[in-house]
Length: 231
Image (cartoon, rainbow, N blue to C red):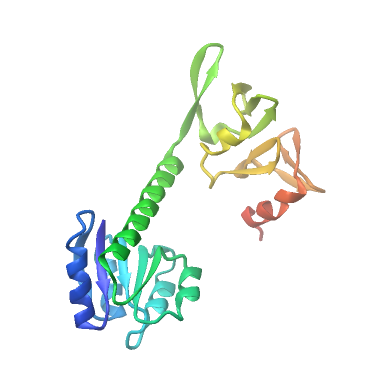
């Protein structure tokens, strides 16, 4: 993992650099003495992991994370203060290390970061998948993700509905849901998953896709409303 150390204390940076140098999975690409330097460094190339101090002049570590928004790398806070922990974890950081940082504690945090990075890569891989294969009459048939209208559970089988026909798959709806890109599909009922961009109408607790009316369970209404691009 490519990492960057950000701390206004030179001695703290030196100590952390020594610890980082002993972890083979880390590649230190630089160090910064303030948040502005870090912001510019992040703009120059990809960084996987940021070791970030909180209390720094002008812009704090927490303010830097907020400024980066969704473009932020994985964050491990390294700070002398414990009182920021709650706010830090609300920003979805990987870990919160209180100085002086031990090698064992740093290694534990880095392992968590590696797991998170691997998980993110796997999610991207799934999101980029443009097709699935289903068994149809003894053959494996490729179906474009964009052709799927909705999926319907029927006991130990699932119907995969497309504009042309439906395909019956021997599987659970949950197992198929885990393989579909979450950005395009949503569970709306214990028996139905729908393609968000194929919804024509929503009315009185039901979804209409083409000529099919699909029930929306009360437990899924909130998540459905969050996903709709309402004007």
